[in-house]
Image (tube, rainbow, N blue to C red; front, side, top):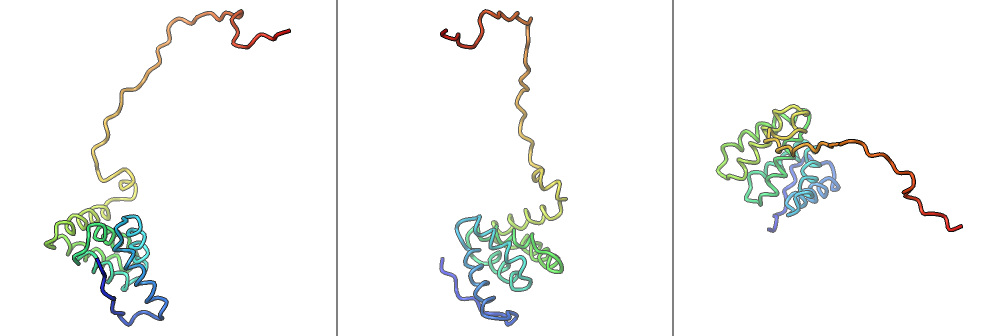
Length: 155
């Protein structure tokens, strides 16, 4: 899918920032989810410009990887942008695209969990434990010293 050129918002300070934002935007729409998530994380540190690009990816007609990465970037927003990102994710719950709704619901759920609960998983069902292997020791056998495991010396 060919992305159109992004219109600079006027907040960018120089051409290097405009080029960086364009590069991150292209990476956000990558088919590789790992690359898209890294770009979304970097965009989450870019204040209003990053928010604008992430919202465009979340509500635009883009593939699932871009939408999930955009939701990840919104979830990772910090400081004063966290409230705006939460509002955007809440607005995404009522959006007509099912993928957008699922990505927003998952992100809001993860944002509400404590960090320790996130590490354990989303409240997933625990995997069934395998039966514990117990060692059964019978009567100890006497060691026969004549049958040593060493090789006999040839002398």
